[in-house]
Image 1 (cartoon, rainbow over the protein chains, first blue to last red):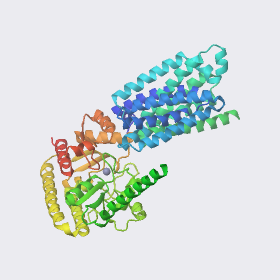
Image 2: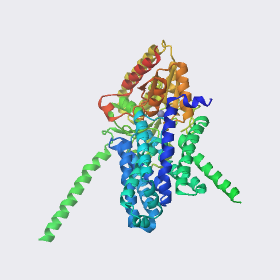
Image 3: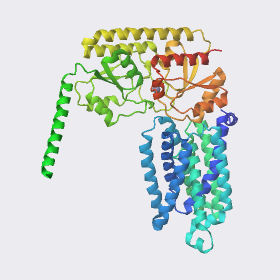
Image 4: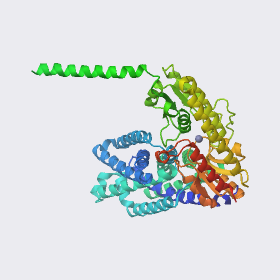
Length: 269
Length: 309
Ligand SMILES: [Zn+2]
């Protein structure tokens, strides 16, 4: 197999479009999530989206729609708990995560068609339908535009909500929009790269970026750069080495993080 | 007054209980009149048992309608069913990996277990693409009509032994359906042997016995039990194969996702069609009167379309 054969197949071209869209958008959300100290939110939402998928398959509505709705519900629940218990923000994700896992576990027991549920666990980036391709690209564009429109406001609320209020940032509105964006991003990413992998795609690029970036702006740009290279390299490796694409993407990220850690240590010495 | 009504109430309840008990009791003694309680592991076993036993047996199928048979696990309700049963029919050959452990825990010592694939020439599980396979043998024997006939014969023998008074009925039923199996086999042979193409692309590797019997060759997207998505390299391999051999049809299963089949179809211009491995039927199919023979005949039509020029 040559390099060209990578793009010779329609399914791989679609996979690459999705990989590029998610590689850019998921780390953008990730930066704010990590700075807000809510790293596990991706995991919590993705698992809750599984409950939505199971519910959707059960009552015969589109499972992706089911995932989207539960994701949004879960994201706002996390926000609500976080406000109730501001000093234990991390706990809010843990509560929603356990609720999501429990619900998904119970509901999936009633699903007749186990293979289609498995497809959501591991994603199906190699089998993207027309509708999914359009949805991913459209949602990615929307998230990206809103993200850069609220670029400064998001930075303020990510670091310190109290001083953000003082400097006149409408934190409720910004938080509301950001929660919505997070939920929608997780829902589409879960469908394509798999619910088990979303959270690592959200956190790993930011973890790498934080090792070398010197400002908020750099953190965002490096995160996108890392995110994009993880998805593209991971997908390429999975094609040549016959691996599951989602797993290959995450392992690429982990290897890169280890590399960055060690390089930094050597440079600092 | 209050105490009196209480006593009356208690007496009434006690009598009801007694009546209930005494009504139940004779039923338990006269097992001879009530139909034999037969439990089948999954759909084809239930269908075969029903055909041989007729009204003399009451068949219940463990893997319920539309459920994926390979991933299935028994619940406590299923174990309770087996505790009450007279006969348990399984396919064997690795189709019911849960059965061995379960049978050891049962306290029902009268339960007779029939392994219907016993004595059949089993295929080794040589081709497994995902590393995660459920045994050393290919369990899908029932898709060869002549093997299905053997399985029916095993069921007949077991029923005769348990219920000798109706043994003539079982023999007659068996002969009727065994003829149907031979007819089906003949149909497959006559329809498929003149066709030029011999390769079929299927979603899960269930058609080994069928292919062996009629000189076909199956290429499976997934292994012996449906696992989910293939990796990109496997997808590319399948697409290359299809382009090279000009395969026109990708078969997928009704109650599984057709996403992968559709993705491959977009790349190759092939058509997607249903080929039913008969592991589980839906309520609609049962209501429409579908059974082993009607679905095997529908499968033959699909194969004919896929393999002719
Ligand atoms: Zn099977």
